[in-house]
Amino acid sequence: MNGESGATAGTRGCGPPPILEQEILEQPAALARTLEGSARALEELAAEIRRRDVTCIMLVARGSSDNAGVYAKYLFQAFNGIPVAMATPSLFTFHHRPPRLKDVLVLAISQSGRSEDIGEVVAEAVRQGALTAAITADPDSPLAARADKTLILKTGPEKAVAATKTFSSSLALVAALSAALEKSPQRQAEVRALPELAEKTLALARQPAAEKAERYRYMSRCVVISRGFSYGIAMEVALKLKELTYVTAEAYSSADFLHGPMAMVEPGFPVILIAPSGVLIPHMMEFSAALQERSAEIVSISDVPAMLARGTTRLPFAEGAPEWLAPILSVIPGQLLAYHLAVAKGFDPDSPRGLRKVTVTR
Image (cartoon, rainbow, N blue to C red; front, top):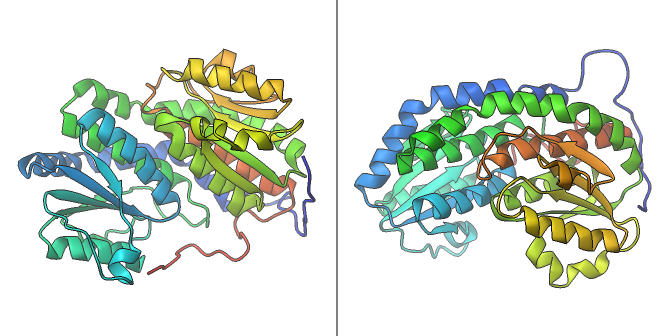
């Protein structure tokens, strides 16, 4: 692990904990409020999707919400059989060449609901007569006003620049919508269990993340790897490391990593593996063995003891969630690691340099 911390100001000391830490710890309650408060709206949106016989979903988002969209892409295709595409906003805002959106659900995910390009995609979809929906924390935002249906993140104000509770709650709403669309009582019950499992995850991961962060104080680069439903979580954890710790963190599918980037791995090279229980565990175990042969420094985020054992650093999350819901839990140890690493490097986790809470793009 190479590089220097560049620390200029610490965040340890007396006084209340950083806002970011408080918001990470609020996630179980935020999940519970969001799922309970959106139950009726979810059923109404699911019914409208079925009534219109939607044949495709187009997701539009930025930043952490874009990573939530990657998760949604896997879910809607796997459980609802609906092809999913990610929107290309510049075709709407700069090139003015939007695609045809007939029989498409345009689903926008935006914590603030104020990004111009996301709003323009939804506005064009409305003009074309497509069904539109928004996931946002602000019911009074321009995005909520434009969309046909709005699912509200009942997270309370998120003051930290780095999204945490709005991200996990966005994933939960996507999961709940997929289950409602499928009319699956079992999957709906599994979604309702998420707040309790998130609470257990915090109890499991909080201490090891705090204790191990110092080990990576001088880390300047790493990769974050997963596959399947958890691929978007690899992207989100990499984003958290970049914006909070300024580490060059790149996310990969384990399959893509084998097609060339594996050549980067040398003794001590940090690799964060996100590997929940499920059909991919044999593949991820084999993949981690290949990393061990190259003497990589593995940080293992998993609910599988054998997978955790592959890591020099082991960050567990609660057992009990099916593979398709595990991403909502596995992101929490990643958030905690990024937060504690920022503190270890001497950075203020509430004020990442050059960033602000609402980023407006067009």
